[in-house]
Length: 339
Image (cartoon, rainbow, N blue to C red; front, side):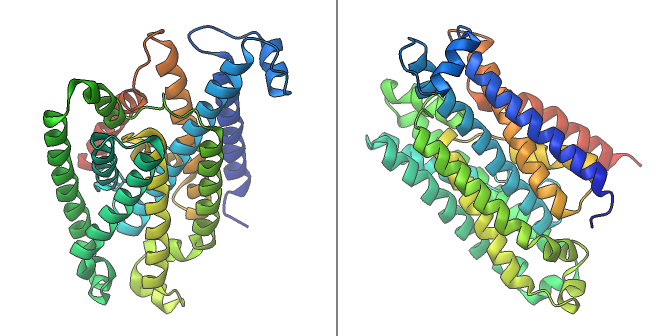
């Protein structure tokens, strides 16, 4: 049994209940509020109400997509922070989201359809992560990494440089874009769920979140040992390199799926694991599911606010997550610098 299991279970249940409540609330809230009777009738399959199409074809897929995006990014962030033993690691900082955005914008500029853009963003995330670990292979996968944490710092710095390079390409793409392409590109770069209206895509993303979390939880004990040092993990029978590769693949797929749905939503993979870590500690068996729930809750709430605070104008969800993420980032830095 986990140490502090009753407290951990209570927190996880509270996060699950809050996330479910936010997703349900998103069905009722929008540029106009839907009566409860109409929402319940629509969910029961009654499409006779004029609001049924709004609930089933717009709000439900978007709410589920928002939860999936937040959960996927938070899961990827928690994994990367543990693997690198660095609290600043997340898909946005390491350039994975930027690489996915570059590929997606290239597809948009070429006039590709939604399916091609989504496939391009997933491929971009995987390609960027492959490049990152190719450049930092000695630091991340070599047995020389057993002798300190400088190797993980090298991976983080390499990721920051990859992110900067991706940002430069994105700036060039925006400069060369036509006026008709520019608005779509900018909103997508800021993180936008306005196009997440395909229920099948939302369900696929939720399935990927569940599968990724299942794989990560199976490796959570090994990850706990790796947090205390690779030498200790080796002596306890952990295949460190194989475990790293499996978790890196989970993080890449999770990031690619999230960027496919919502574009480059920043700071979720950084903030959600930290908030859960403050409440539950750093046991990965609890932190990973807690981070996924917290990330889903955060993005679902932010997207609901993005649809309503300036209605009928819809704000990019990435703007609201940045408003939360930047203060938390600065607060954590202040704590780290405090003597």
